Image 1 (cartoon, rainbow, N blue to C red):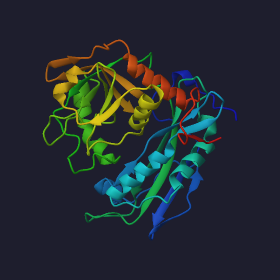
Image 2: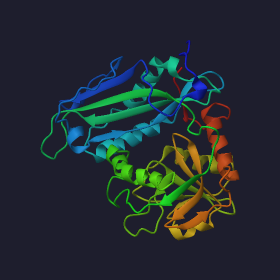
Image 3: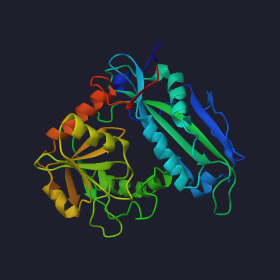
Image 4: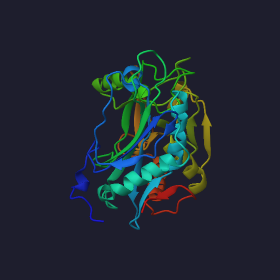
Length: 341
């Protein structure tokens, strides 16, 4: 298929309208079959549940062109499972088995001309989302919902190369111990907006949120999980019931153990011990791993030995291996790569 006439190398990380999207509606206790449509407009009643009580969940994944020219997505079955977990927590209907992956497949296939070519550094970002669509004025779950999948081509997250981030320990709480921090709900990201704007205003790239119960343990940032490397090469990630179970993080842990032969550990990590790590990164779909060079705790600087110019050695190996798997340069574990066409 002929690709769109786009300057792929200079794409930003933002929204570009593509030709098609997927739409399915839930009413009277069941989902309809869903359709692919050219209509990008969402029409809602002024009292729709999503507008009144933020009843919405979403996912994020990417479609790639591999070295062999195939269009693929990465572990969409895990996105499907996580979205159903999110929906159940907000008293929304779950999607029938296979519906999520089928919708993603159809949407990406319909927009194949928008999937950037291999080696361009760009990808097609895929955003499935669900929201309460019927009027709701009393505080209760909606009765009707809409599930949609949109796509947009995006450039590499790091323009001009990877530069380690400087982050600050936030004074704000991201999630309560028994709240919704473990699901991908829009309301969690709304909670983080003021905090990230404040961080940017103060010259920081991101926030480090601590547990709201004791404010002594590392949780995550507004949109990524933490990953640390000890001075003897062990990969350590925070364990908490109020952080999002990142698919990228889980994949990196597998890569660390099975591909790089590294020891890994998931456990509670205190802010006090962060100074003892050799490397730090933020894991997420957009950049895979964003290296962190410095954490500032109310004026007290924690500088990682990996420095402020490049990724740490192990972080780089993790990044290169996982992106190699995604792009088809390295053989993937069974079931990780879903071929679109």
